[in-house]
Amino acid sequence: NAGVTQTPKFQVLKTGQSMTLQCAQDMNHEYMSWYRQDPGMGLRLIHYSVGAGITDQGEVPNGYNVSRSTTEDFPLRLLSAAPSQTSVYFCASLGGGSGTGELFFGEGSRLTVL
Amino acid sequence: TQLLEQSPQFLSIQEGENLTVYCNSSSVFSSLQWYRQEPGEGPVLLVTVVTGGEVKKLKRLTFQFGDARKDSSLHITAAQPGDTGLYLCADYGQNFVFGPGTRLSVLP
Image (cartoon, rainbow over the protein chains, first blue to last red):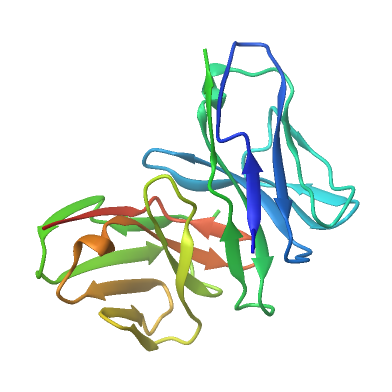
């Protein structure tokens, strides 16, 4: 009963490096999303997807790319890491009916950009 | 753009005490949810409220939704160390908008 799985849990990058945060869910949820969590700012939506082949921008999309080739996987790519992208990243998928859905979160990926 | 505010930002209490935390929105909630996030984990849904004036209870937790659907409170009775965590309110509309959270520490 895995739910939402994120890898890696921790990553340190140098400014300008690129990387991909992986997210997979085994609940057959159509909606998946990526958030970043910074102290005192709550969770902010980066990108989301309502199904395979469909993605859209959230509140803070700059510097990040996503793709959704399958229902299960929703990777987040950092193109050229910057110190401002130091954060904890959460992937979440949406279960439940319309209007009363529940977000299921992964355990988070802590990224530090030097 | 909707803005959610939560108060207090931090709260540290002794085991057995009661507490209330608050969530206010700059606009009417579509559907209000409360999540709890423990250290090193992702948030977990506690409750969803939809109707103004609605009150829901989950063991020692009581959730109240304001009549105007712009504010909510979470009351914990006889807090326990297991209640420690970050409490987040969220509006579930087209997407989710989260508040900054109240970080609760319950000391044994």
